[in-house]
Image (cartoon, rainbow, N blue to C red; front, top):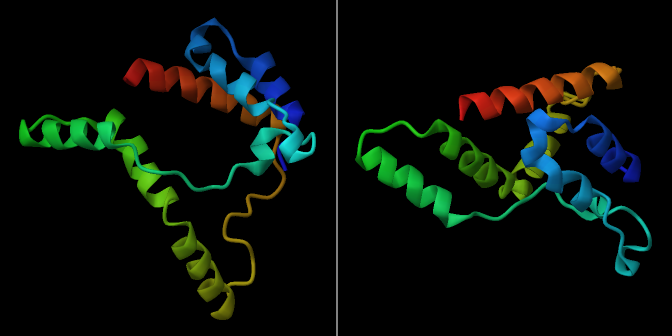
Length: 129
């Protein structure tokens, strides 16, 4: 589970080259009586809704034969995220068929390296877009 320390980590690792992501640490650290003093991030499901502006932009770009991968990728991710029930059903099928190990298991995570990798990836994504 991700706790307030995750918001602190994001706040601590955010640097000038990633200032566009300043809202992340604030939102992930939000607390509310309704969620019993747990971080908001613990209540967020891994499921999102679709935003049509990205979809429209990608459609328009396709009609003009212009690649728009930076806009299309988040739309694709939101679409896949919205299929949570399907992903859960697929997970049950994997278990039933003998795939007992968590297919997302990456083992021990070097937190310092992960934070540095994410920082560099965010910077690279800003350069690419």
